[in-house]
Image (cartoon, rainbow, N blue to C red; front, side, top):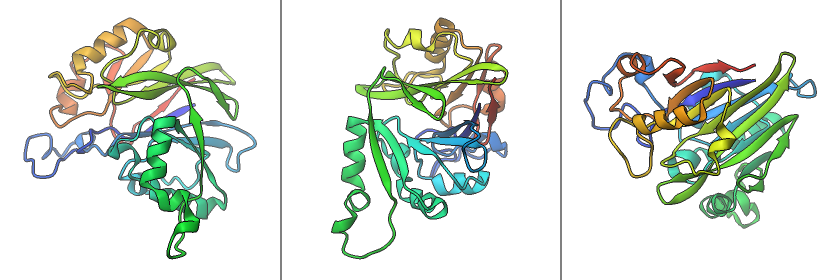
Length: 272
């Protein structure tokens, strides 16, 4: 199983518009952070190219992220929540319809599904469009926290998380390959992990977890708070994501405990 970090940045991205801080001016490519998104993939002999790929969230930079990594097919798109930095790339999914000549299944909770259908009404109600321009063909599937579902041999578990006052989803993925089981969990935009969710994260091989900055924030974990979650669930390896311009990759990554690192755009993690 592989995890590709497409974007590791906060909602404003890094560098930010109008900012000349050291991180926004950094020439370290790891400090250039597009909006948070990942691809989870694993082998499947029935796939046209031998792998199944699932995109989590459609960042505004979706087109650039896909072109950068040469990704031309997806087996589904999964949403954590409906904030702008996680959904505004939806329109670019139409290129996958064109290349693959098929629809795309999308997965989200009920709240996110409704917002997607309202914001992108021209996609979900194409019969009402004035012109006949090509739009994405998306088939929604509603998810519920804790209700595990299977995608091509991997078990996906939606995880209840809090993003300020907003309930959102993270995801745990369990897959078994030739060398045994592998697991990962992706939990971005988190300010609190409910007690009922913590056991679902315990012992995961790879945890990707929100860690915005050092100072507290009402809707995101600070680095200190994220480290407390890591200490509780004890993953084998952790990567922090949704990182603001307050955090220099080279400086901060070197100070983190063993088994904890900052994610960066383009990071490829192999699991199992």
